[in-house]
Image (cartoon, rainbow, N blue to C red; front, side, top):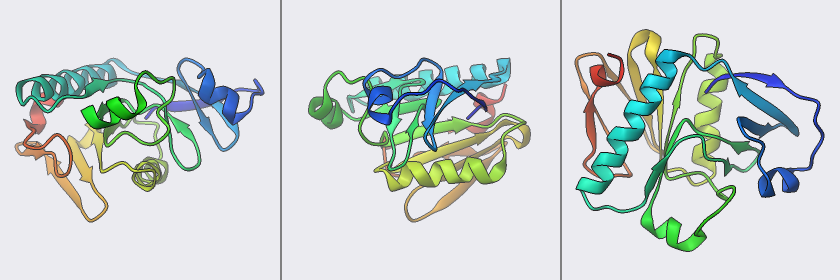
Length: 179
């Protein structure tokens, strides 16, 4: 998740879904530019993308791991920092501009300027739109919160974070993301 700047460019939700604006989300009826990404945020995003992708290939679970790809929630169009789509969903939706639901597994990485209420609300928004598991990565305190429909687990420095519902068997030492 990144600091947002509201733009005045008018477009409908349908137009945004068909032609998503680069580096932007559709939030509360407005296009919101994503900005404020730091070097640390980018490093964590890259490491998590690479780790999920390598595990997906080695475990032969199929699908794709991607960054900043738009997906539809029940209210908005979001661009999760990292997302995993299963082989079944890829077969169902094929090549898409905007996934018409949340990705099954996704991660948002906090910036120091993010509001905690907004950060958690975004996770709940994803879960309400078919996400099975959301990772909230909080660099300042070296936490990874893994949230599903039924639980919220906290993994901290010195521990190993594990998937709970998607990309079965994946784990990563928390400190590997924050080096």
